[in-house]
Length: 439
Image (tube, rainbow, N blue to C red; front, side, top):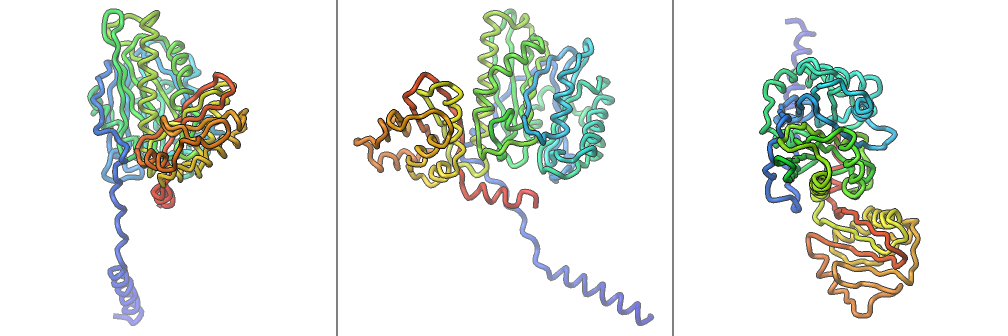
């Protein structure tokens, strides 16, 4: 053997030995389920006219479902709400454009979602990916491409390997079934520690109307609609225009009233689909009022579950503001408190540091008067009339802070405006999760 061949072989062998001796990279620990999680995923009613499937496409994650498909019956009405981020993803822009289009008579619809890659800030390549995925679904299901809605969630700024998704479309279509909504909920998770679902049923005129919804969200959660990915399905007979009115009317009090970390995602999407397959008559009159209440209840349940799964969360917190000059001012104060890192870390440390709440009220920009301010921890009056309550003790506050669910009450004493916002604490685990999210 020539001398140079021996050298090359020796070099390769040395490289192999070095690789064998290199310490193995420890596997990332399995995510612990949030201590605030529901006991189990709820039993969701089947929605006639809505079929689901979920598969492993390997977009980013291995050995887990990461793409889901929903096939919706002809005549399905769809409404939506989306992030107002100026850097919103191609999927969001595509959904918004399609909802503004005239719906072909009797057309079906579909929703396809992937986790692991948000396809955001990917330019023309991202738009091509949206077109390829939605076009592939449209062809496979025989529906107009304008009726295929898509979402992507995960890392920002990396091209979506959409070929991995389009290659799985035949498998997704073959596996569609009404009973697979729970698998769809699992497939859209990223840093979530549990799948999120909620449901409601009401008696309509001539039959039962069912509502079932799923969501994903854990971090990058802040009010700007929709603060996550949410998909709600109902068999109600209702027009797209009326469905949009109900959604828009209730979004501020639900999804726009939660915050984990004050960061709004580029991909936030909420879609509501009504298949019209219930035996009940068209939703109107008294039934419309009951349906709206049920829809709002599902929206609120899903919104709260997102907070319960806030990255690293150990406390579920309602910030309840009353006595403001307007509801908008009350919302402004509530968000100022809920987004304050000082307030959130005090809660994490179970420290009843009510001075941080005073500071958050003052910086909110809302009208406030020190001498009319009242602060409560649950039913405990901590401060009133611009001064610490003489009957309040630090021990009372410390004992209250031990609870997993807390209510921080603030009354501004200025008017009738009121609003609640829901948040969680800010722990070391939040830093751990986000410090190595991309790696």
